[in-house]
Structure formats: structure tokens, C-alpha cells
Image 1 (cartoon, rainbow, N blue to C red):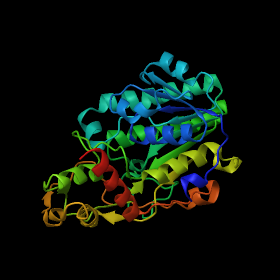
Image 2: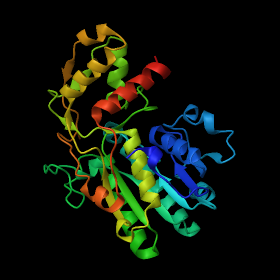
Image 3: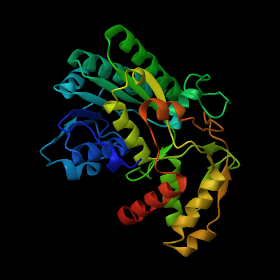
Amino acid sequence: MKLSDLSFNRNSHVLVTGGAGFIGSNLCDWLVGNGNKVTCLDNLATGKKSNIEHLLDHEKFTFIEGDIRELEICHKAVSGVDFVLHQAALGSVPRSLNDPITSNEVNVSGFLNMLVASRDAEVKRFVYAASSSTYGDSKKLPKVEDEIGKPLSPYAITKYVNELYAEIFSKTYNLETIGLRYFNVFGRRQDPNGAYAAVIPKFVMQLINHESPVINGDGTYSRDFTYIDNVVQMNILAIKSKNKEAVNKVYNVAFGERTTLNELVSSLKKHLSVYDPKIADTEVNYGPVRPGDVPHSLASVERAKSLLDYQPEYGIDEGLKNAIAWYYENLK
């Protein structure tokens, strides 16, 4: 399914928290482009105003610079809103290991503030970014929503607590919620810089600069890498679904195939060599496994297909091709 094939109730008012971030800004783009009123809430801690610069003067777009850790700000942001797409969080397993307190404050206390504000404003539906890290030490592949293991990091704990809180608010306050467990999302606007940069943009920029990427472990760890347009599709399906069986559940958001880190680097070299043939000869270095890393990740997307009509359009190869083209055009 292409994003252009999706229809949604035009003139709905949607709040996107973390809307200046990687995923959030892509959601803002789609919603505004399809006639919806959008409020973007972001404290710009990890988001960038440049991601939404082109939207700031749009009549249907409102930017609020604020922090979800402040309940008053959350109440302000949800005023008059029909739907909430809650993307705001402090991501990264290593970040949470280095600073578990701040991760908890943002990802748990901030999340609870947004639930309370959404309940009080009587929003129609609260869709939130969950995480594949919730599967923890479960070795079963593919990952199925109702079978999880024990968390392996503070970040994973915070995202699982989100699911528990959402379930309680659904049952206790009749707030419709849908959780989306993202699996290694990548694509345009994903920041390649910083200590906690995701692996794909980090490797892309290293290879562009003829630097050797460092793979943690022997390269056999695998991930279900998911292109941004699949994630945007899933968020829109989640807020527009009329299927009562689909709400108050969590869903895997992925493509449904896994790629090892060694395979990933090979694919990156192939696509990048189109722009610079020297990249094909760049060597790869190997380092120690990172604490908290899950060895393998592969999602079942059957629940999403069945209940939300999710049809992921982009596999890893086409997604990488599109992402690399964006990096070359915008960041080189």
C-alpha cells in the first residue's frame, strides 16, 4: 500500500508529540499534506526545528515548544485535539544505561502526563510509539505481540510500562489506545550524528566520509529494519481504523524480514557506490557487543495486517536506496 492511497478524515486535528523529531516530522508532513490540522509539541532536546521549518508558516500547523514532563504543557497541547500521535521519548538503549533517571522521567512520567491530558480532553484515540525492545530476552522468532520476555535495559522497561499504563487507561477511563512497537525504523531526517545515532544513518555518513564503520559483535546480530513510510502508514491506519477489535491493542510495526549487520553494511556499500565507487573498498571494523543489545529481532506483522489492513510497502533494499538518496541530497 502506498501512502498516497491512504485516505483520512480531512480537517481532523491531530497532536504529534515529538513532532520535530525523525518520525514525528514525517507524520506532520503527511497529515498537513492531507488537509489535517496539526499541533506539534516538542522540546527540541533530540528533535530539530529544521525538520519542521517548511511547515511553520502553514495555516494548519501549530508548533508548541514544550516538555511532556510538564502537565500544564500537555493540557495546552491537547486542547481541541481529535487524535494524539505520541512520539515524544528519549530513545536509545545506551542512553538509558548511562542515564536511567532522565529516560524514566521522559518516557514514563511524560507518557503518563500525556495520557492524563488526553483523558481530560476526551480525545478520540491515543496512538503511541512503543518499542520492539519490549521483547527483551525472548528468543522466539518471529516476535508475536502477546509473547514477550524480560526487559534488557532501562529503556525497554520504560516502553513496557507505557503499554501497561495505556491498558489501564483504556480499561479504567475508556480512552482508546493503540501501541505501535517500532522495529529499527530508518529513513529521511534520521540524525546521523551524536553518541546515540541509530546504526543506519551513522554507517551511511561514515561510509560517505570513507571511515570504517564499527559493528558491535561479529555482525551476525540481525534486525527487522523498517523504512519510515511503513511507519507513517501504520500510524495513519491506527488513528483512522473503525474496527473496534483493533483498538486497545499493541502492534508490531516492521517489514517482517531480518537483515544481519554484515548484510546491512554490504547493502549500504552497494547503494553508496553508485555515488562514490571508492566506498565499495571501505573496510569494516568489529567491536564488543553492547550491553542490553538483543541478538535477533524479527517481527510478525500478521496482527497489523489482519486488524488494521497494514501492507508494508518498502523492504530493506528499496528503503535504503531512498534513504541514501536523501542523505546525499541533504547532508553531504
